[in-house]
Length: 307
Image (cartoon, rainbow, N blue to C red; front, side):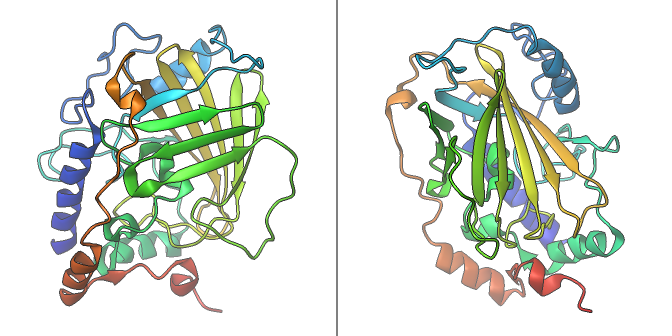
């Protein structure tokens, strides 16, 4: 009960960070009738629609001939629990569709020991981002942000993603530079991008084992490899999918999908880089949570079965 209540409080705060235009309490399958794929918050339906629509959409191009992704993009989901959320599970939140679109169960395909550990994680440990640790690459796409959203900047050989939450940024190199050594693990990992037609494809390795996919203990191992695919569905909507392969915890790969919505043209936030203050007072909050018996998650290597 203590952890679920704490999770509900996190979810409530996260909703406030999502900014204007994102109502998570009432998600209708037909909420955006002017878009190529109207149901931008029914993620399985949006994913199926977007896969077809992107085949015929001709995006605006950069001067160097690639789809122009530049601008401010806003996510449409929070990170509390990215499987299906039913009304009342977390405070006053209503129904939220799952981000997990494969497997067909819309759930993480954990092996038995990892599923048990996921439950224990929520009971024992603090969510990494709740104690202001970085937003890791696997949950970059749906991490709550304020009205500034996610900023994409783009050149011929480099794409940068940034957001104000915890000052998170990612650099996606499009050249053939060598990968990092296998024993080097980072919050954002080591990402390499390439274009497949009008789709940006990003492969990431070298991730650390301290991240959670949500606030309910969904953990991963350093063996994780992710493949992201980012495509324009219409001028104002991005389709984002991520396939995660982690043989240490999953019985099969898992795929998530989400819509990003372009900021309104002329939005003053386009010209601003605001400082996120969510890292302030973390020491105080961490001390308080540890005093009631919760501690930071120690990582996959600490909780994995020992031979």
